[in-house]
Length: 87
Image (cartoon, rainbow, N blue to C red; front, side, top):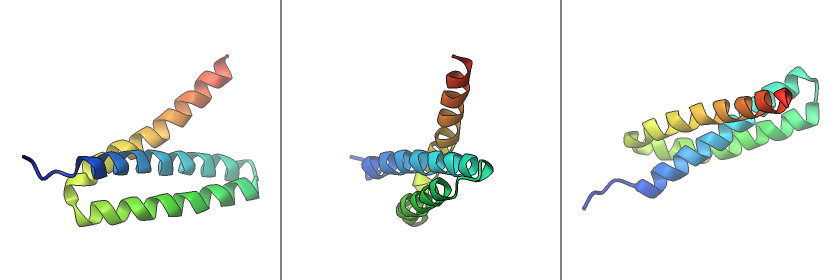
């Protein structure tokens, strides 16, 4: 049986997806001058990333899952926004 931490890998992937979604929102809110929304997004970025970073720093095998999560965290909200504007 493998000792690979599948549950941690999934949590890192989902966590970084959430964190990068908040990054996308943060950049949008800063660009629009929405201070409170940008500040709340900033808070969430640090809160979520702190948990994820501590995991993949201790176990380098989780880095690819973090990278995929980061990709999805930017791609998904931008795709949603583009689709929403087209409708």
